Length: 635
Image (cartoon, rainbow, N blue to C red):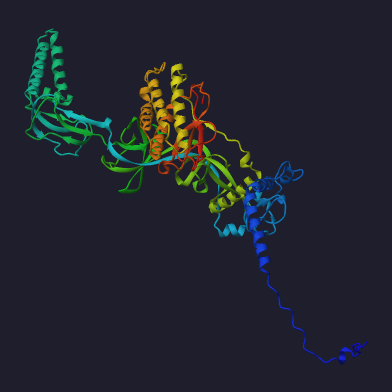
């Protein structure tokens, strides 16, 4: 049998050939691609289906992670103080705070320990940075608490120094000595010469009695009536404003004068003149009005909020724009006991000395009323206080770049940029007056971080609903309780219907509501016979209920229901919820409905929120809730 001879040559002896080509890579087969796509679709569907099932577990995991345990949030032996080293955060996502090291669940970066200073109320800033951002400090001091009120006043006459010169006999002015307005007169100075038949007759009578008395004494007579008649004649002349000196001159002259001079009984300035030479004057006529300007009044008006800071005897300082550099000191002499009903302002009267006559009635003046409310108080610069409306904060410098935010309670604001501190600061402490807004931003960041660690989880918080005041009535008759209960039951039924996004069936409930109001109005409230007259909102409740009887448009019905709710809330706050009503009645506020008017309210029994204005769209929308008072219950 022939065989193929074995080739005994080595590879070196074999002829050289080309190297083998590499095997080209193969792509996935169509079957493989289809398999992977099918697997991906199945996993995606499973994720969607099971998302709701695994979500609670994930939430519980994060809840336990963020809430932490007591051992994780405290250091051993620190009595509950926060252990900042046990908390970690992400530099990219600072809202991530975990009680143990690890990776950020968002970006998977390593978590870093939180600075321990961020868990304290203090803020530490490098002194160089505080210099660069312009932080300035000033001390808290002690001093008198002075309230300064600035206002504008009008200079007026001192009414107690205004006098009239009137004629007491009819006659004619023969000669005028003071013949223009504004003339300064002294007491006893001649004003005018008056011819009067009555005055001439009084002179003759006086001279006659004087002559009879003289003759009687000369002949040794003892007529008793002579002195009395003489005194009567003299008194008559004096009552006509004839001075004793003029009567003495009359005695010496022995002849009655045609005209007698009338002298000024007062000193001052003539502010009214009704006399001319040759003029006839009658009894009781005002010839001159004379005002004493050695003292003047200044009338100022104050606003209502300034009333507590003004009282009689208080010091006042006045300046005039046309007399710069000079101050006039005066006193508050009277605070009027009533307001101007139109302007809601109070009038105050001040008194100033006017020895040089610089102050002239009719001038406008700038007035400062300075009242010392306390001899000594704690004072701070007003610029140091950050006022958010709900709280006032000041930053106390502790030195070495450390600052502490303090809640303060303010008193009276004073002139010079100072304010009284009632609580929160002590004299001698240094507070920040410039740059505190930057410190406040940092403080809020740290406050939010501390609250995140210390605070109770919102899911564990129990709702607290405050009672909205007390009712006006101490009790309600049984009939009134029944009628009011029927009104509220019908109202709640209408609200539930609107919360279901429909108006079906509200007509009968609206009719029951209106009938219940009619029953209420027929019931007299003991010891309050005019109660229904004072609360006209009951008419609004009835009117809106009648509007709802035929309502078929949901939007219009909700508008009527909003007006009905406001009126019914006022009524129930006044009457109180009947003591035997089976549920608490609460008032809720929806900020979205009628947002331009501040939102709307509605009433409902305590329990799940059912917003009648939005229904299924936002059934639980509300931001405030309060419980209406029970009749006769204390506030």
